[in-house]
Length: 324
Image (cartoon, rainbow, N blue to C red; front, side):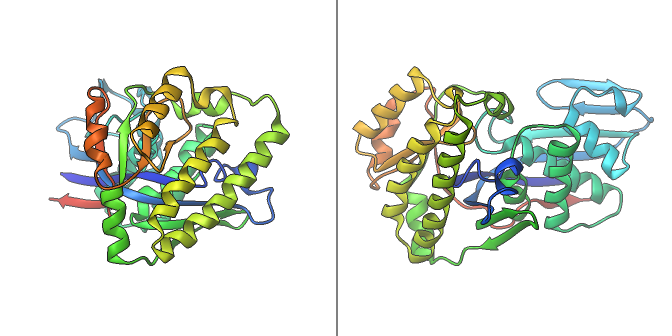
């Protein structure tokens, strides 16, 4: 049995600038500052007695031909790795695997590829894992998403990720242990109780494409600032910056926010948050919230379904935790 473990990600600034239509047409490309979160997608691959394929996720599929799988990511990962028969595959998520704003779908793709490659006797790099996941999701399945999630999941850590015509460059941000501690204590994820596919939100066209480009350039600038703040340990400044990022992001399309999300944002800010932004494409998932150490206790009073997660870092990225 092979078991892979792959983290989801939290993006501080720059989300949206990793989409090809922006990053490949801007002189400086796109940039995202993010961390891999200590919450994971586990994928197991085990040999079957027969040649069928059994896939278990939120539902179960048993097929004689992998081409008949409804799960597109699993089907294309099997095709790409050449493992197409006689296996049982299970995905187990620490968090919901869709609509959270944490890049969980891409983490599934990276984890599937990692486990299937190792099952086939190959050991591949983080770069290849991320690149192949992008090929499946963007080039083959034509999902209107960017490239940050795949690279954050494959590499782990706290990174500045650059996107341009030359490809993707992952630079690990060298920050202090004190800054890492403060990030864990002062930033909190707050579940909205709602979820929505990133592809659905991203397919919604803004009323003004030129305004969208202007906003994305502003968001790109936020990523530059976030990098410097992370390096310099300016955690409070980073907390304020995510509020600015939220205001820029809200104008990109109508699906980014809504009355219920705006109301929750106001409640969070009224509790004393320095800044808060919805993660991912929008429409639901998690708010990333910054405030003093005591803010988390106040956020707990929001009650269900607003569960809280601290920002603890996964430093390894997608890895094989069992091979035997």
